Image (cartoon, rainbow, N blue to C red):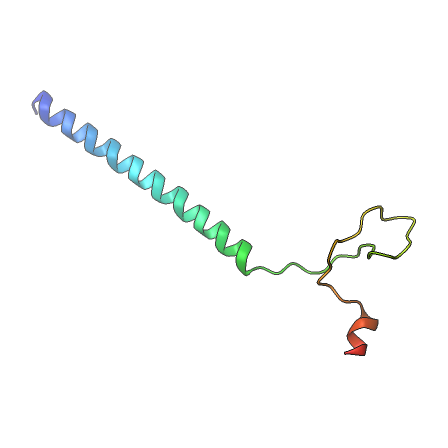
Length: 74
C-alpha cells in the first residue's frame, strides 16, 4: 500500500469512529429525554403550604399529589 492510501484509510476510520461516537451520544441523550418526559414519579410525603410540621422545613410550592381526604371529596 502506498502512503496515500494508508492516509485515506486512517482518515476514513477516524471519521467513522467520530460518527459512531456522535451517534452514540445523541442516542443516549435522546433516551434520557424520553425517560424524563414519560416517567411520572410517585408522590413523596412533604409539608403542604399552610401546614405546621416539626420535621419538614420546606413545602412544595404547588403540589400535584393529593392525600386521601382530598381524593374522597372529588
